[in-house]
Image (tube, rainbow, N blue to C red):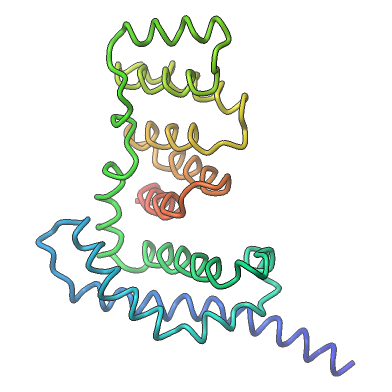
Length: 229
């Protein structure tokens, strides 16, 4: 029985070790962030953090990160193919450290809070007038490229402050392609701009699970914090 107990103890300690590592890296990252002054510009501060803080912290903890490869109790880590381990482990750790910092580092939280509308904003979609809405509606009625046209018309409706119609179109897009993150991101943005932070966080988290940029999960954590305030 002793070997089995040793193995169980090792698994438990590895899982605990993972969270401990995330906490340590988050604390060091927050300390370093406090030394950066980019005149209140969130994007410049983020760039400085990446070049002066994060690269140093990754180097400092690289042996600890590599040790996580053996943590088979962590589903996300265990499912990474062996040939992608190095890159994926770094990405997983990075996302977890940053989400940890959203909860525990006020400076980091404020930086990303300001970055949300700059990074993901449906106003970047080049659709403006009623003519475009009519054109998209015609294409939808003809069954042409339904998913993209529902997404585009949703943003056109959103720009016209027709929120219910926008959400309805995004829900239809989700029904057509439930594995696509884009409509969830757009729904999250609309909910956030209407101060429905809990609903926005849920949509962003879903988008991340469907393969969206890890930045989306960080935004989700920001909105969860906003939801609790």
